[in-house]
Length: 277
Image (cartoon, rainbow, N blue to C red; front, side):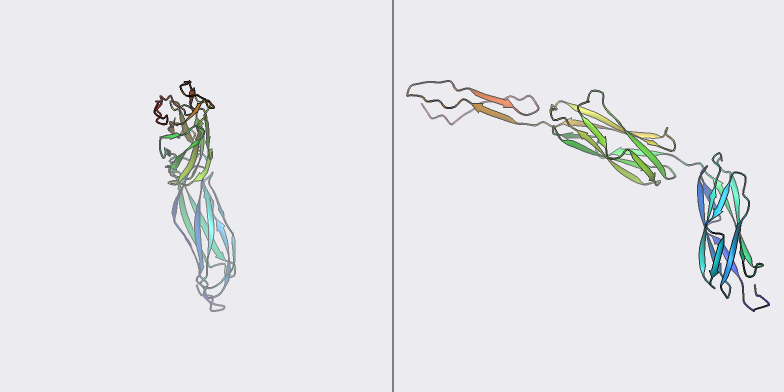
């Protein structure tokens, strides 16, 4: 590639990061095109893209490269999109040509093949512990983990499934939506279950969480939690006071015990504080 006029070498090279890539229906894939000036002097270039199969599209991040020095490299990004109605193994070729603006008979070209694959849409939902307990008036926290087990980034929605006879119990999620979760990644969500302040230790609540893929709402997974009420032991004892007694007198002193706990309890009275006689 030597010019007879000035004795300089004009040489341009364009190489993609891959010659074959895949794309999902209606999706896009990106090619990095590495452009290197292998000539002896700075040069400027124009880029052109060829026609693709009907319904497919392509574009470049730039169509002109100005003043690329000798030995210098720059990257041009090519975006290839597939039709929404494409099916597995559909394909299209993408052609790119780069031409010197100073010596237009010096050029290079490259051709890539893009094929369609069908994405795998799946998810997995788990909880740190299926059963926990809490005191009346407290909040029990569960960690619910959603993993994107599909083949592509996806968005997910979550909803709570409340038990029928637990309207007094509160329940909430730290978020009801997870966006752009990469395949293989895990996102943790907090599930809050509020135990009623008046709850007995015999009460419990079963709360569930369902997760849906937004790409395909039929793809779901769910978990169930079971929250019990811890036994609280507390009581208050009061008695009559202020008696004045003479020797030989007798009196009845009323003692009252109040169960301030949340369960049925039995009590035994015992005192060793009354003097002999």
